[in-house]
Length: 176
Image (cartoon, rainbow, N blue to C red; front, top):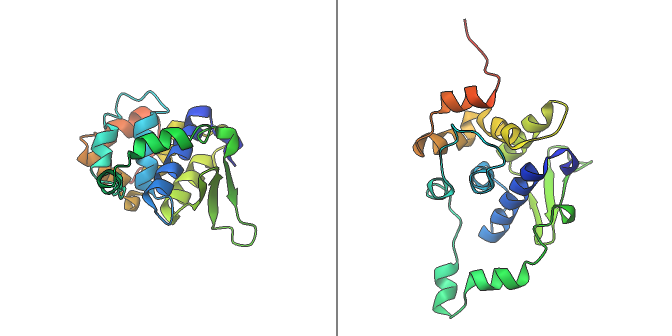
């Protein structure tokens, strides 16, 4: 499934999986996907004004840095030494279970993480149209379902959602 993703979109999805694994989350959730999009910025949308720090305020990463620092361990130094090559996109894959088609997993050198329902839905919406999955389409997938919380995080970060949707070319259902 990752073959359809552009390089930047693939890096954003892999980053969200890394964030989920680092946080000890049982699944990759939409808030982590949004955080990865804010960090990687796989698009050039002027309306996407939120920063990674703005998103991070709304995401529980279970940061273990302070706990490890009391033991004299620098988590960033450990990551630098042990993660060489782990972000290489060719070492990651995204697969759907044949027995359970609603189970989508992201596998990589750091481990495996299932996509939570709303994150899976965002990826499926991004992949719905033929062609390459871009960062804009991942954002479109996140914004297609307001119940996943991505819209609320963006609005809290000061993003004008209407302008962002128009700039990204996201189709919006019009009511009469």
